[in-house]
Length: 593
Image (tube, rainbow, N blue to C red; front, side, top):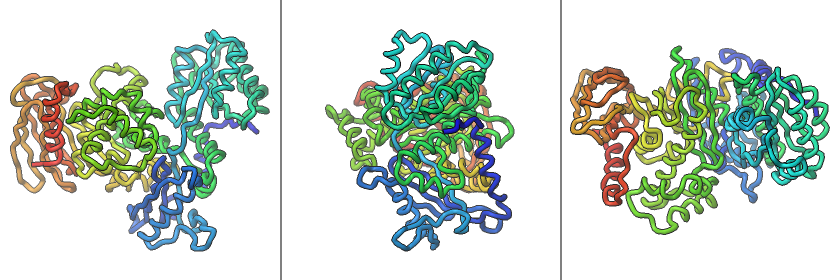
């Protein structure tokens, strides 16, 4: 197989160039996002020059052994979407062909996050330099790192080869060596990979080379015959510089190609989509970049996706994009591994009751075995919410290790906005609960806009940036994301009265609010309205470094939340105090007054 040496952005641009601009060509867009549990589809149409969200539908993802063809789940979701919209997206004959694409008067794009993570062995020169860069690159896609080799590895050549064979990797990532560095050590590692690949009896592994550019020819010579070879730019061209964009883009395309080879039905979807099937995380990254640049101020933006198999963090921090995927964390398929990684005690601290022995583990085992199940009792719902908080917290700890120049244990930088994605955040009965979960898990400071993706548009909008940038702007700016809440979170500690606020609505009404310390208080600001808020803080508290602040807020589903609980939030160890406190928090966010 010919090695792929061009950066994926070139390939994407070439595909995107085949589609005409929105004004003259595209009128109807169908999107699909294939998750581990659900396949979600959405329809957008051009009405009077403006793209509008028309409808959505979902079906269970058919990736389990009894329905092992993911295109079947897509057909079911499209059939439901057709019933809603009055359009046909699946043929009525026995073949049930997908009526998607230019020939059928629409544009179709697909993203995916479902399926098992790609088993990966990482090979690099130095453990604290090139391997660390490789690990950070792998955090940007759906990867399970099963082993790593480096120049200081004490294992013999035979042991290293056997380790690769035992790992049975789907992907081997080779990194290391600056573009002006020595070649001999890297050649040794490349030769080790070649020997292992020659001995593999299963399908050829994928090898992605992102090391010393001077060795690209040697890599082709040694590996091309034995592996599916990808070559991209050096992830660390110099000791002082990391460059993640090319390797992240290559990993995103590699993901689609790998799924097409290993997942029945995936090729059908890939062929129907204008850009193949992109990883959902790549689409998230595109939207986060857009939101960060939209004001011209390079603001910090944070997206959190709590899925069944993974938790994803996309953060634009001081102009740099950081993407983290924890494949051991999730609320469904990965619930057991998540509970084991987090610890039952950390989950239990968010409960208002004393869980019975094994109650938490019994619940997460049930979620792992039956990911589509939903909590049936209040106790189960509390466990699910507790686990969600800890999943976000753990994923954020991993993500913040890559935030250059930001201490890991420092308070969360101001983020504007914070976006929540995933069923546990999008489907609570009350929007206030969604806001509470984000506030508890992230513990932001300042005046923060919280947004929610209730329709699953983030993945599809990110993929459409390559084809229809105007549509993305229109959808995101006209309700594609739900304004969940504006949270006012002072820094510092105070006793007694924490703040006084004066709220003036656009219709001239006004009201005053006094909020004690260690309290959650919600004031309604209906969607579609605006309000001006003037805050005077008590002694010891600050907002953006000030004791007095005036700002504008947009109407939101949950309202204007004053969070004076301090940072970090203190949870009582005493069960009786927790039993009293946690229900108060739930009640407060669900009852704006």
